[in-house]
Length: 321
Image 1 (tube, rainbow, N blue to C red):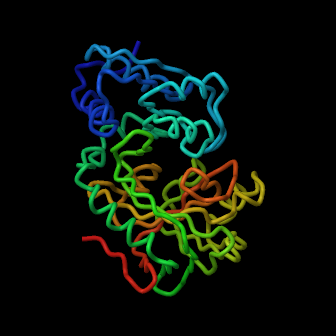
Image 2 (cartoon, rainbow, N blue to C red; image 1 turned 90 degrees about the vertical axis):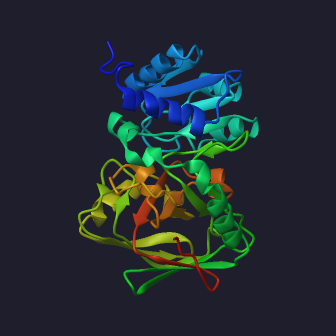
């Protein structure tokens, strides 16, 4: 028996926001829900709400992955290819998998909602008007795409310089505005992939790290990057991050993404999607970036989130109102 039913108006509203506003779903489309053994109850609640609206959806319950970016089984991959809207409720994100990329290329819209909880469904961050962020996201994406380098200043002194020559930024305002689009509400962001071998400098992580062993940080962690890869980690919790990277090959240490959060209603909570979308936050995605237009193939993708940083695209300061 489900812990929640249709009398829980806030949760029902959240499902409707995600499916209709963020997923841009219409009843002629096929709908697939993916969960795992930790999140299947939320998946079943989605089915309950959809059934009350006379919408048929499929629900696949997968084994719990070990990390973000782990490929699902072949049966799931095939099912994804044939679905118009996919709701990814698995504990770890499938956004950076080949299966998701292929589904998107085939026209599937994808809502990437990893590690969702009843609390995140109740969050004010999900009540942002994501469609109103579209113009701003596109404007910032154009500014980044036309630049050749990015400089990030953290802790008022450390500089991280990234070569983005020829790379195209992704506007991700939090909703599927077209076929093949991936959205991760409450995350709303703009991101770009740097040249994989050409990021250098230091970066202070003072907010959170999107991994179950870390989350909200108790004190800052500083990373030193040389030729695109993390070479040194310092700080009170640095050994935890070091051990996480040690569980993968060297490609997991490559700086793969630079992202800027846009969501006015998001807060720093230790939850990946809300923290990445926190307005004005910056995150470095480390590991795989094939799904974002980069060239680094890795079996993991971890985001290192900071606040109160400055980001310059060439000489232009990217600031949010």
